[in-house]
Length: 484
Ligand code: GLU
Image 1 (cartoon, rainbow, N blue to C red):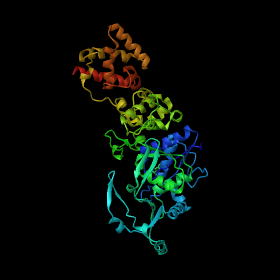
Image 2 (image 1 turned 90 degrees about the horizontal axis):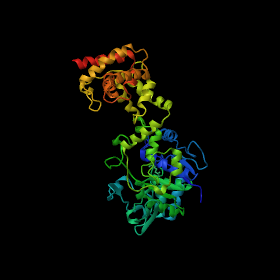
Image 3 (image 1 turned 90 degrees about the vertical axis):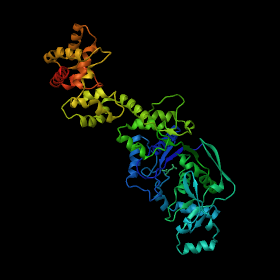
Image 4 (image 1 turned 135 degrees about the horizontal axis):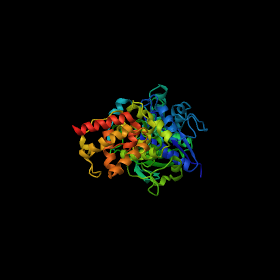
């Protein structure tokens, strides 16, 4: 068998949609699983949709996610050019389109907008489709030549017979057969001379020796037309793998409106690249066991495209957050700190030991922006209600808490070493003398120094970070509140 060659063929139209990144990932994994080549091709033939800067987004995303391409516009592998607008200049699409015209599989069409808009339309899968009436198929050779010589604008259309059926094979969907009458004579070359995606994908995938085509299943309905092109040229078609739709939690197509439909959205929301890649791998694919956490190298090893599912994949934001939290927990502290620092500094302006605070939150957050809500009390004691001193299990209430705080205040004032360990030893001694449970003492102290029910550390850890002066001030404030 020939070497596996896959391609990522994005159109530079803006942010990197999660669905596109999934195609890139699966293409990369299919190639690497078989020691094959993964190629990047830029599909910029739709000049109207072109967005400035979108090509940079494509490169940056591949670089960041580790989906290293073996060939592409910046890495010649002998199949260039790798940008469709540049390929067009070589005349490749026109050459093959003319070959189809010769074969009677395509024809010139000179119909103007007015005529086209007078044609009947049909609604197919919610979209309004015009079935061209083959008007120009019946032009004589002489008429066509005269029109071309007169410089009349034209397109080249695929000629699909009205009878018979076309069958193509998809790895996941099996054989799909459609009535030819349902297929429109799609445009192959547009009036601006650019090929359509529909034509360019076939010419390029063949001439670039692509063995596996992975794409979203929105292309499934056009695939019979592509198959007819392969057959007309006498080319072997690649293995087709059409991926299931990605939906939001409401089972609607994942779109911008969800707020997390692109890779950039997710990075801005504080997700780690590795977690996003890992999560996206599972949007339509699953391993044999129920394992969920994979590095890219592990995915390369495990990825078997036969295990891709046909059912829509739900983008579960909560699950992604969970996964991100797992990645944060597993992160090396220095790398974590580097990413956490801007978030810490955003909330904490005081001169506190940010590394200690970072260590406390590392195991508690799912995404970096969660940091703020865990640490805001360090900066300033929030207003709190004294009902927070009451805890059934700890057997505390306002009265017991007041007594404890009054007792420990002089101990803390006398305490020279304000480290966590030293503070703990002091308080433990008090606990033992009093003959109570730890929580009976720690709960009110933690409440007084944080004003919160949930904190990223215990009473003594918090006091260590807050320092003696601030801790004592907060204990006094607690006493004041409880006495009022
Ligand atoms: N340019 C197409 C897109 O971005 C590529 C589809 C394909 O992979 O064939 O949707």
